[in-house]
Image 1 (cartoon, helix red, strand yellow):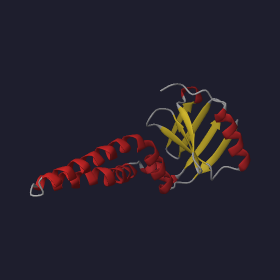
Image 2: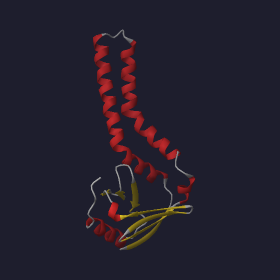
Image 3: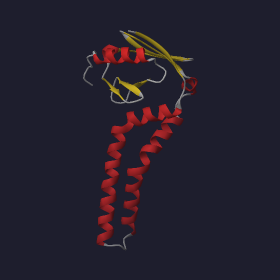
Image 4: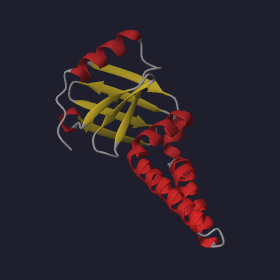
Length: 159
């Protein structure tokens, strides 16, 4: 396999990637938020005059609804300006290489954790929180088919 594509910077794609990678952690926070809401509602039902109960409900709602989007937004804002110029993605039988104008990252397929396909991209996971997004849009149909066949034959390592 030899696939090489230019991928322009897309903040929406970056947000989807960060949301995907952070999903396990944000799901736990949401569960904690739901538990706090239920606890707060129970406390309100027992004694509506206790102001702290309403605070627990508010805190639970904040955890359940706001923490995920805030985390993604902050992560986007903390990204280096290097990534805002787009990247060149090169994949061969041994490596996946991400090249920005001022930086380059290479990973051997041998270290692969798993590949997750979505309608608009593949997420190539090398650890639980380290993913390379391989967007489908800049690839030709032949490149998509070749890449899909390649990753179907990979043997992920357990992480």
